[in-house]
Length: 299
Ligand code: IPE
Ligand code: IPE
Ligand code: MG
Image 1 (cartoon, rainbow, N blue to C red):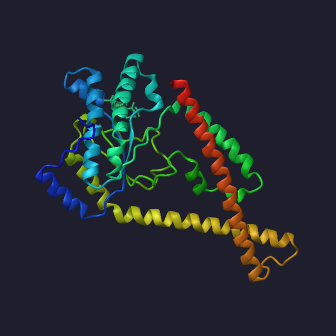
Image 2 (cartoon, protein in one colour; image 1 turned 60 degrees about the horizontal axis):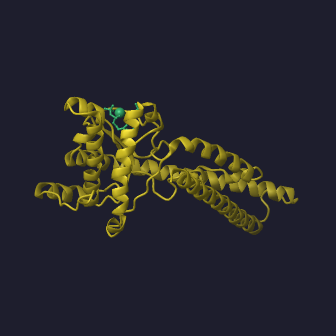
């Protein structure tokens, strides 16, 4: 049986899905799947059974998302802090992740037909080292070009760079914190905290979260647009200041003639783009190396 079942929605679910789909839909939804152990306790089952049902709920939720036309989902399955749990629990969770995710990856080809891609990121304990090196490299690469350092460069350096920021982030089990999950990427996302425990998550809970997103859609959109506009404005201001300095160094009046100023501005933007591409490519190689080494070690 396929992990993400092909199953259709019930008639009533389909009816509501169609109504919801008439409004603006989130393209990317992130889930913090929380509450497995409380669920196990509540239902008097083993803790591992709670985690297992949590993974199965993920499969079901992915199917709902697919049916609702949500093509991108990011889930928080395990945090660095979770390594502090007992060895037995961590091993149990890792076994489940291996089992369920490898099945999901096997289904990749079929899912691609629906436009779904799967990316599993892990080994977070090694990430801080990676970040240290990234910062060191960035400092070296940009020491003569402070203008290169911007929020949009930081976006491009993150593991999530080829994915748009989540439109909606959902945390279950009544906890109202992000626990370090996608902190940078969710600054303009709709955050929805729901009291339901993850293994009990239902299609209706998902609809309720999407409705909250829709009710806040125009405010979120406005905030996002004005943030992007501000980023562009700041970059332009920095470039203008750089050109003014350059013109002064060359002995021109600070405003120079406008044609020369325009040419210099274009040149400075093109050169920055080239430097940034070089830096990002080097980073990508480093990352590929890192993952290759990781696979060799864990093979
Ligand atoms: C979330 O459920 C799953 C993981 C963190 C792996 P928990 O295990 O945190 O369950 P609660 O929150 O203690 O009920
Ligand atoms: C949160 O883990 C991460 C996941 C749900 C995977 P916890 O439920 O242990 O939450 P914190 O660390 O107490 O915030
Ligand atoms: Mg928890």
